[in-house]
Length: 419
Image (cartoon, rainbow, N blue to C red; front, side):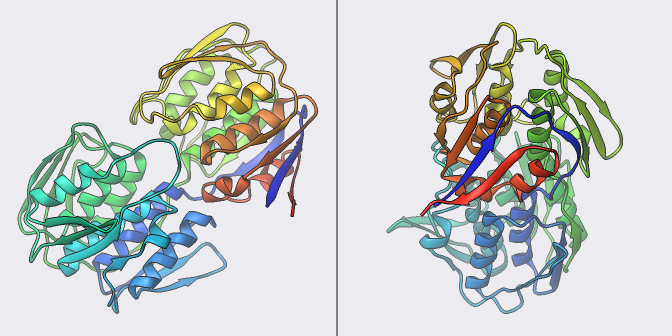
């Protein structure tokens, strides 16, 4: 098993380049199923989740070619297998995104019930209700979802709560359906907008992506596409907090400041200095961090994927902050590990009270999910002494070469193999 070892207390300085967005790349890879033409995706991050999804596409009969410059080409002209097996779907919930395009193009799909991070239930019932309203017959048998529809029909779909993968899956289904579909209370995340851009390049008729109502008029055929993935806003935010935590100065390149507005506002409230340009950010930490209260909410609110990282910063604030998690029920698993490092945090239901101004101390800790691992790296960078993080395979699902990027900014960080 690999571990990451950090000697904390160094001020980070320099430039860092943000990788392509994992959460944009996955649904765009799924979109390749919709056409028998060749597709080219650029700025694809090298991550475990991307590898898993490519393996899943290959198992369906897709020809995938990865090139050295983060370019992936996908040819789905010879798809012959319509089953997404348990051993690939169990590790990553986003694998369920193949259901919509398989159903739309081939009229049937068999997809294992999904797995992924242990941060909450994240049920797929909203996806299935949407497919049913478009005319699909759904059965769940032996841990698999079986869906059939001679031809999907446009439908009006209302989500009780916004769901990113649900919105994406139904967009992927609706583009080839007969008639008009309306997705109401749709997710507004930048990754949903990036998927819509790809589908429009393919010839889809989509209006309203980025608002809470998306209108899709189905078309008979779609063509191939060539697309550059947007930068990862969660990686952007992680490096912003790293600068704030270590009293550092980091210029963040290849990012979209507009996609991290909620985080910028909260960091500025904490006293952090931030300068934005078209596709870069300059973040300068301050010795004195002010406490800031926080409630996670769907985009454009504060992202649940940044809650753990922001909590580390609040352990340094002069005063008490209240952090409420409204998206996932198990998103506080990192707190026990932060407490091992000396943080003073108490939990009541979905709310954490963080008493700041505590000096964190290095300790052996264990990552429980993807964003928790990033939070522990940040804590290790800010702590006094040595921090050893186990179960770092979570990290490789969503951050490309994170220890190399931090090392280039002056951090004392290395990955070791502990057999």
